[in-house]
Length: 458
Image (cartoon, rainbow, N blue to C red; front, side, top):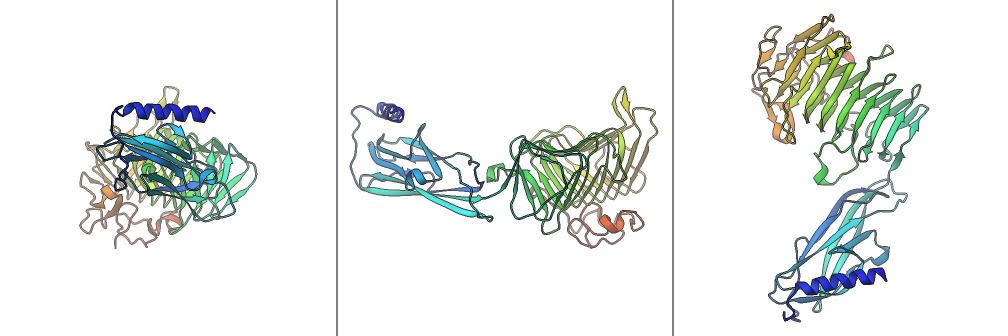
């Protein structure tokens, strides 16, 4: 009864929008015009609804038309729902549309779980009958089953593999004394404002051809580079993480860490990983610890690396590209400081070697020593964009464009004439060479003098 009243009200609105004396044509050659003849929804996880898409239906004729029927072919069994100018219905009849006028159909899809582990295609169609003409708008969606983790806590050693994607809703916590190991090819999707809280140990170990993906669960094209869709990873006081061959994107802050390691392992060991499209920063450390090798980090709202309150930072053969296509960034891409507050400052131990630190600002590296805390700063053989003279020594290259092949299309490999080729200091005696620095981000063997940044070029 309520639906009938709503639909009747809508009909009144549509009719009143047409002139009382407007002629209604029954000409069978007159057809409706659609702004799209088919609608494709990208991967929709089972049980989660899609975004809503709009189809504009237009009557290009000078006289009014009566659409005798608009319906979903699948009727009540369809995974799709339609809304016609504000009314939810899967079947409407005798809808008037004025001359040179239009109406909107809004479409959404929700896919029920089943046993299929690979993406599968769910189809239906919207059928419109007007003056004996049958017109069809095709609907298609790729659906995928997944493992849903809603505000869950991991209290024992756990391994995730690539059989099914994981959907995090709320907060997933790895408790102290427990480990979460994520294997190559695993996809971890985060619902809006979800986060991963690490109080124990996190090990992410992808591979060159099967990286581990951590990103939003909105896979539609319009969300591909949208920052701030989930909160990010947080390393608590007892937490440690080793992340290798991963892609982390579209969060507020990629990784946040607020303490030093309490054991012999680095608080965060980050290697061969891409972090991009963060609303605030790729990494924030408060008196913390980061060992980073062969990483590509770019397109973040304020910072790529923001490390304050001192700490231990060992960064080698990384490419830091401070370009931002979403926000008017005003802060140096890499900012390090021994100071957090008047009562919270510590020694800053920083090693920057063979990196590219570049971007759209005049200065993309800032190192602040505001207190008398003893600090050790080593900046060798980097390519740096800097307005000052602080980094002119130690074979650093200042203010010469590194020559990325195509930064606009996110290709930060080096062109043949790049100044950064064969400028890297020999790292074969470095304690991390055999495990992390021997090859570049694309698994190409590094030869010395190496190219600066995460990509070798022989």
